[in-house]
Image 1 (cartoon, rainbow, N blue to C red):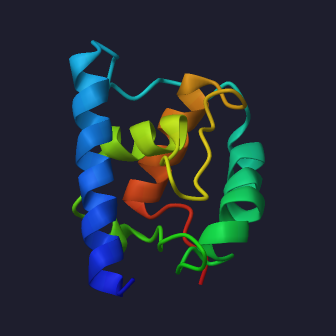
Image 2 (image 1 turned 120 degrees about the vertical axis):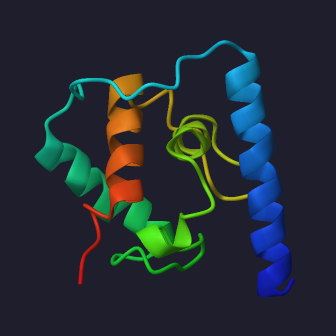
Length: 118
């Protein structure tokens, strides 16, 4: 599959996840505090997310997670993707392993570019 096909598929999945999340009445506000410490969550992003998305989040098996690559996604969509995973891909659902506040914190940090390594 070419890159444009993968990008279009990713956008469609993102839109579907956001609509499902919004339609379910799930809150889309950012939690005040993550349940794990920021250092633990940053390490999780580098080690676990980085194993597929690249250690500098520039992409690999999974798409890049740098702010310039996430402009088309609202923060709620990023939260939904992390929480629910992406069926038919290697992206697993993280909601069994992370608290909602942790997922929201990661989503916010990714969107803001705060977790980007040089």
